Length: 98
Image (cartoon, rainbow, N blue to C red; front, side, top):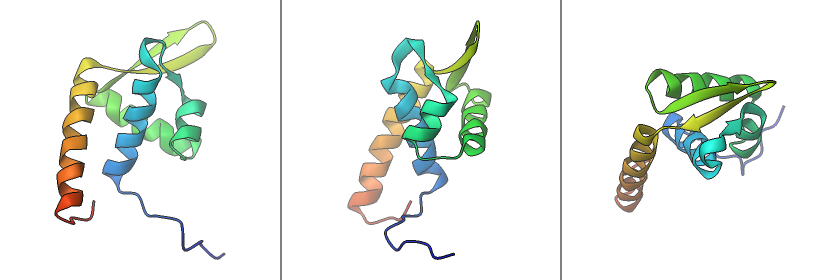
């Protein structure tokens, strides 16, 4: 099976950043896992794995209501996301691969 040359490898940090971005964009109502998976271009399983990791570190919360489960970024998650963006900008400027 050939892999497209355009397909870019994403680091764990890049994936975490995208998952946090999606949940931040969705605000306090949160994002359902299928939305996170689709917008961050992840499999359902990988999206769940990353969300659980972020919950374990207090960067996201899980809200369950009636039929669905939503993931919401916490204040700590927002702060982490902004610090990570600063780091990634600097890393890019000095050509560090992340």
